[in-house]
Length: 143
Image (cartoon, rainbow, N blue to C red; front, side, top):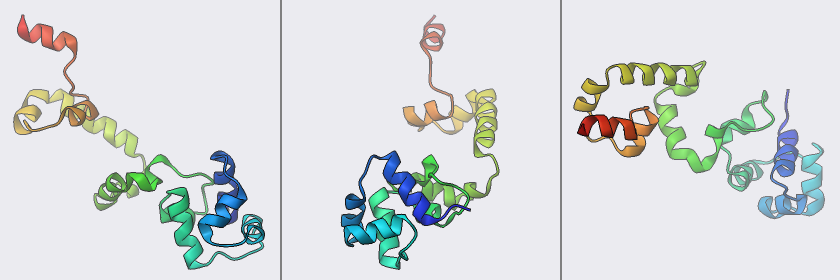
């Protein structure tokens, strides 16, 4: 079981931050920051909110006692994507990468029909789905 103070220490080390940076972010003394990192001082709700903001990691990560470091989707700067994934229920999918590979394979197999049904896909969306036109595709189309 991973505790919050272990996560804080791991993230400080990973990001090469000092305890004084944490103290400023939490609005506490450097000694209190040290006590928090060692698990000797409790984390209050305002501390918790500041942890989420300071490390830019979603609150769910801090509450999960199985992982020491956050997954890529848990970073706050991706909250638009993470929020969409959460709304779609993807956080409950056991292996989202496997599901995505299957969706991409299906879309690629039915490429013509899919592109006809979704003509407004952006280039980024096409690349994400594996539908970006390659140079060879363009040559074959113009030949």
